[in-house]
Length: 86
Image (cartoon, rainbow, N blue to C red; front, side, top):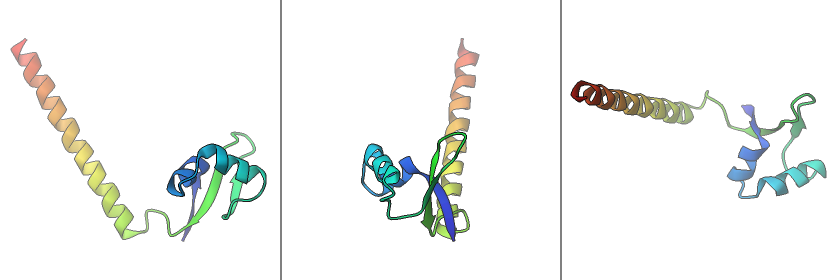
């Protein structure tokens, strides 16, 4: 499956600076298809094997969400405890 990511993300994943990737895009030298949104100017790069359909990616995303929720709940309990003491 193909999906789109921002040029800045593609640059990070491929070990090049954003400026270099942008120059490559302007010179039509990117090794992958890319388009620029006419209104916003955002450059989107087509990549293979991306997207939430990948079970590994989905598991990682769900794990991150669960950890974030646990962290938020822990912080809320600390605030509640602090407010009770004050």
